[in-house]
Length: 120
Image 1 (cartoon, rainbow, N blue to C red):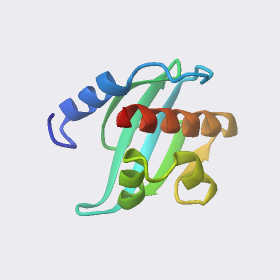
Image 2: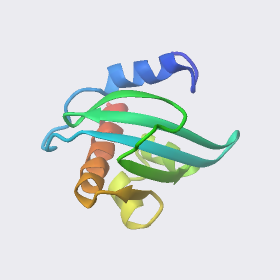
Image 3: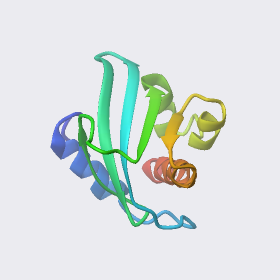
Image 4: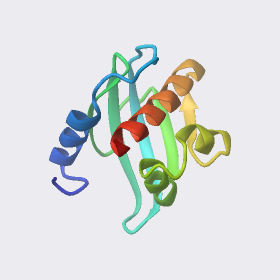
């Protein structure tokens, strides 16, 4: 697998995790994600959600994001590894999401589903 933030890395993540998340109402959103505290400092990436599925992603901030997320690199790794539930991180303020409240709930559900898919 290519290394992050090579655009091919984002393509492979979308291919691996772009399936439907059970019980998630389809939604569309452009999401900006700011990851702080990593070895390269603060990094920004973007993800497009189409029909409730992870459709595309890439490095850098998107123009006109519907939602903005902020998370530490440590918490992001913990969520990906199944040590931290994204919904719990959100409720504890460790995963901060701003934007349309309906889409925020859907995004947290999508993150939960993607974290589970990434572990299987």
